[in-house]
Length: 201
Image 1 (cartoon, rainbow, N blue to C red):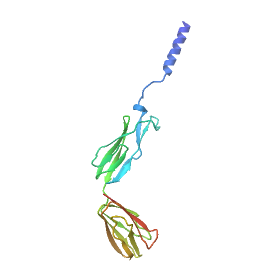
Image 2: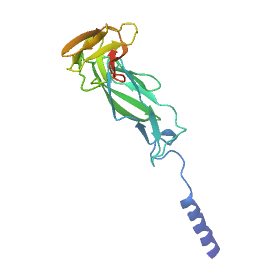
Image 3: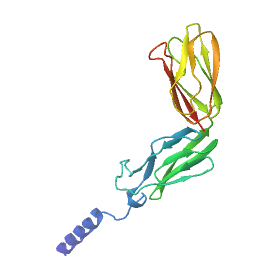
Image 4: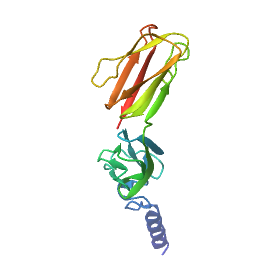
């Protein structure tokens, strides 16, 4: 009888120490959560940004063998997202972009705004401020010249406005930007004095 009791105790111990199968409290493939590389996005109409989704286990470790994320946008009229997580800004408004991996998901709020139709570029010292002005297509940039003479000479690219040549001081001059692209310019009177106008849809 004593030997039977000992065998029973050993059997109970083996059952108690055995590991359970399945995924437990996590989703399939051991995915417990999904992390995104940005808490939110702010984009101008016509711009894009890349989201990256990472699968995590219950301990917060990255799961490199997890399947690729499935991406959705709650408002495609405002923001689109492709199968790789590239977000495109379509129109002014907000949209929630969601990444789902093995039943677990995470979302970010995407806010889309429109670029201004006019900007002012000042020239304190030997700099253009702002260095890069973002402008809506067809908008205008007003260059405010101080008492120290400057000029504005644009890179020779399609759609570039007319230069503001010579030595200009104590006046404001406006230029229109009808074409979407990045325009670079400089003051040839002061080497290294450069600026940009980024024209967006």
